Length: 227
Image (tube, rainbow, N blue to C red; front, side, top):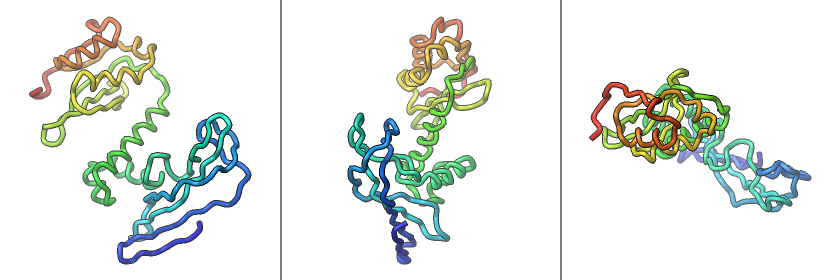
């Protein structure tokens, strides 16, 4: 830690980070030891609050020069490359999201809806990356209305393990088409049943991507208006 500043008038603590001299820096692409090239302009990350004060970290991320990948920004240990929040702060937000809505958590943490949604999306992506290429034999596809029914989300569920596998905006064929791109050929071949009510765009997507689809589509009871 290099220095800190308490701003009582806005309720913030600002911490500026620096690094010791070191011989090499890992390339974020391949991990090879590289020389320090330079530093990015200063960036900020929201960290866990200190008492009642928001804590903001400041740093100039180093850039390494790799023989194979050229100049790249070194990954910092406290945050993901695309995030403006530390990993610990995102962990807190995700824990709260398990018990409350995005709107409620955003209000508690003084975040915008886009910021809290971005934290959730990154958590989903991390989960997808950790998930092994396992077979899902029975899945359900459904739309979920939000914002007073004027907008929809497409959701794909693993019916055996009772978990959400995929989510996309709207309820078009293209909304479901993106799901099949996340599966391997083996996973698609292992699908035994897709449960769904009679919504034509979803049926078209299943028929286009799943082998022998008519024997695997299972129609469920009507769950709500489509218009």
